[in-house]
Image (tube, rainbow, N blue to C red; front, side):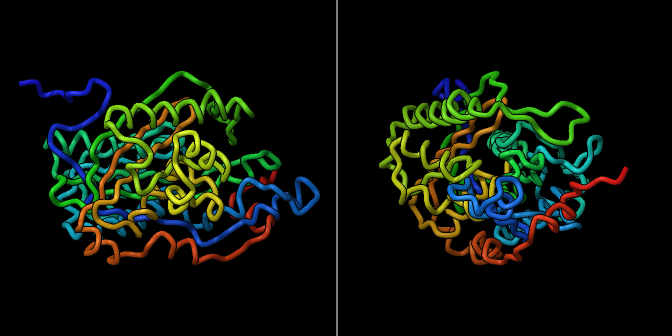
Length: 359
């Protein structure tokens, strides 16, 4: 018997896998994009990439936010945390250069010490990388449950374009056998290449980006290839999906790529959160998925495509089950976090993010 996926392109476990619990977290503080424009452009900034972005508080980082999102996922999953056998966190802003974030999160939510733990990096698709690995672990029956997280406290150099969008937040997912899931992951597909559109050298405080190079040869190329290959392999078109969610570094990019793949505004609006919270990097696509699961109904089909600079995309074909009704109200919804906001000015933002240094 051939134990491998029947399609040589798709990444599909032999044993069906789904999401039993999910949770999001978005910090309270918001920095309006107009406030950034006021300092760096001298105006109110018409045509800004977002409305505002989420900013972490003094006591918040990738670890603390991952704990909050994971606790929400556990509430929905209604399982003993000791049953989780892996904790994987995707981020490009782990608090420690040498010390895992995953061990702290595992300890805090009560699932250690008998777990496999690790931190993942692939720019903004580190969260879906962790999810694909968790799908493989559960699908191989090495574990019944695995926790995958995408979370970031992104940084942008003062005055740089990233200053408008680099935000904080993300999501956590507990992967399980499909028969227990609120949403079944029918298949995944990954498309990667060596496209250096975004990078940060050791000892550099802020990342560099390739300006317009980040668009067509990076973001649009990889998302459209991943999305097209997934739909071709699954014999679907955009019309077969109720919802679509794409990596959202700003407002325009996901809207344009949705149109390129044939999706309407009605299909992608629910998962498009960047105008309200900015680009949460490793959590950007998957936090959009949590917002969709907060509203979706049984039978609804979702196409998710992430993007990470460097570069690559992970596509997922997902179907919601009837268990969604009994699970989603057990924890705060994503829009609850978005609505809970405190506006700050640029001076407060500078203090919270440690952008002033004393010499």
